[in-house]
Length: 319
Image (cartoon, rainbow, N blue to C red; front, side):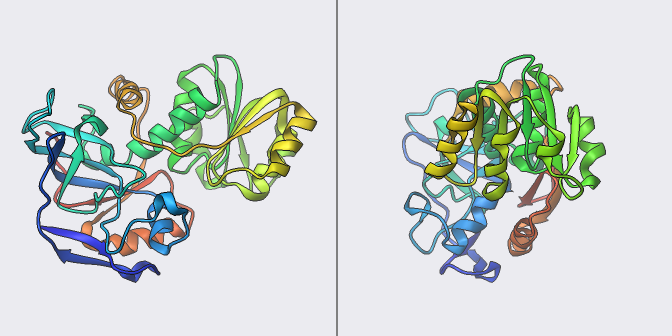
């Protein structure tokens, strides 16, 4: 089979397409024909060697954690799934997921049936960002109907799903992004829009119950100013500093949280139901063949992707 492998940390040119042996599934695993694999910023961060030890695979490794594909074989201890089933999921995180490949073995507990309304390329772009947005909003952020939520980088992978989840939950959704994304974000459910290139968000927004921060740095530090007393910030890029935590507590009695996303079949099932009911749709801004993984990484690193990028191993089809 063909797979992308990384033999050394570095720029996108370290991603090489190679012929490798097909993996063998364990008793609790599935052998899946990968139809598409999602591309996430963490993929190129790991490739460059910029992440912590929890996300430091031994070299060489096959990148990727998101997939959508078709089960070809099941391990002896697997029940509930069988050959021919179309599945999707976030697999093995933080261990290597190895989804940039034509075939992958995946823990059966990490994947569920693919949404019936999505093709593989769309489904592959959903698991990591969907699970991140779900946990940030409802588990760490305790978002409730009628509250105000500010989503930074609202047009990005996590952001555009978070907007839809929050809107469906009955929250008032405020999104920051560049002006070119305003129309699409309002279509997804944004009630108030701030073009971060034209105006500082803290001058335009106040009385926020929850901030979902996918940017970090100065944006995280400034987010305390828009919170109500007792508000919450969930930040994604890296753990917040003690100074940021203390400032939020002192100025707004607010909490600042960070987490690492992991496979969660139960939450993914909730997201799938919302997809099939028409409440959520992933935005896929680019689909490239597996051989163009380097170009996909370069586009992701540029930082202006709307929604998600996906690698496809064969022409899109629905199972």
